[in-house]
Image (cartoon, rainbow, N blue to C red; front, side):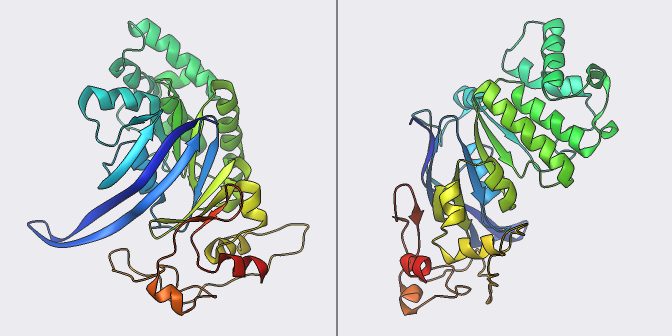
Length: 326
């Protein structure tokens, strides 16, 4: 299988300013050496608690945020340091769908203007007539009527606005789309419609997705493989079915235990105790040890590496096998 996008030891630090005119030099480590691979045509689900670095990773991959260190390879090319026209060319191929379907749309532009803006920037279409034809085709593809062309974003419901956001991402004919909590702001019934739309579009247009969500039920529904993050680091990754049926990291197992189950025996609920460390704190050993139910002395001094535990199943835990067999 062809690796379409890969990150190698990707890190991102945000400087914490005490005052606008003076910096304390303290940094928040949003990403800590994240390495992952995404195969062409698949959906990689990225899951974790709020503040674990999911959205930062998505925005680094889309080059909306420049990483502090590490590399991003897209279709075999390092794009982590690209600028100017080279970066513009990559942004045509990589698009993003944001969480807030209203805040991500310009309230002063009509839907037609929003969807044709990218076409004009990237030279898709020769004139207004062709741009309009393309926009109307997009509206139909995402399930919106033609009269949406002249309307403003505030005239639509949340689900309709997210369809506009999806159409905007598709407007420049991308190959890779980052879905950053693309359904979390929607009602459950609308979520299902948008998820089905995204999956249909993937098959039709041969798209590759990085699907970011804190909702494990959604992740399980759409993902081929799953990456679990905790405080800026990858703690477990593997095939979706394998991770859900045989989680090997105690954090993954705690997340899965919180999913409501209908018609089957409920999974034993694991309640994490202890304090969540600050992202700016320097922590020795495993970052999860302050909340881990199986933490031992080794966890205080040695940071576990992401290691293979079966074909394609990687875990960053000193006692992953102990957790699996307990």
